[in-house]
Amino acid sequence: MRNILLTITYDGSKFHGWQIQKNALSVQEVFQQAMKSVFGECPDIKGCSRTDTGVHANMYCLSFNTPHRIPIGKIPAALNNYLPASIAVLSAEEVDIDFHARYSCKGKEYIYKIWNNDIRNPFLDGYALHYWYPLDLEKLNEASAHFIGHHDFTSFCTVDKNREKGDFHRTVKKLEVAGNKDMVTVTIEADGFLYNMVRIIVGTLLYVAQGKISPDEIPGIIEAMDRSKAGPTAPPEGLYLNRVIY
Image 1 (tube, helix red, strand yellow):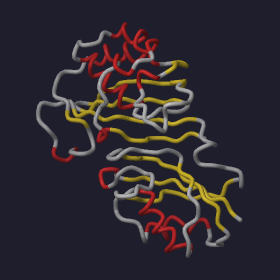
Image 2: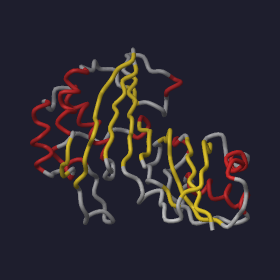
Image 3: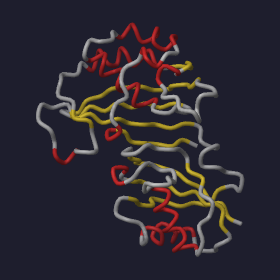
Image 4: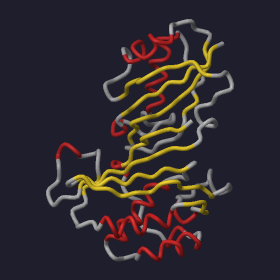
């Protein structure tokens, strides 16, 4: 039995997230169909994370066990032959049998893209948030610094019935806002993320930009452990899983 780790990338605008859904097309469903074509069956796939509808992945990792003896170097091309243009396998490697794409993960990095221009960019529709009001990057980075460290991020999490119980503590290692002409990118790295955590942090930073929240209010919002104290949940189309850390 071999344990294979695949690194893939996908355009999330075509799918209702990664995980299998009953009444909607997911990345996992399409990927499993390609796996069956190559391996003759669909192995049990372990994905590194869930992603929501419309969220993209520059880097997504999954692992699976298989007795199939296809050479490791031929797996990417074989799978890509059956995958749509919106999904691509970047690499394949054999890993220890106890490796798990999710539970072996030490951290993840997300980016959120904001097109900060009065005029919309048709080529970024579905791939960046169009936000036309001025963004003070120095002010946003002042606010961002308060998120770094080990905190209870209940205020920055959407809680559903499946997630009401659990540990809401996460360690944010990096949160930066940088601009390149009209494209502003929020980069956040943590040891793990709660449901909608990145999008709520971005929505809160946009409230800071609008003057509805001041940077020095962020510690109090974190300490409140109250979702209503933070900003709105930013739309999904600007969000990318950018890096998975093992």
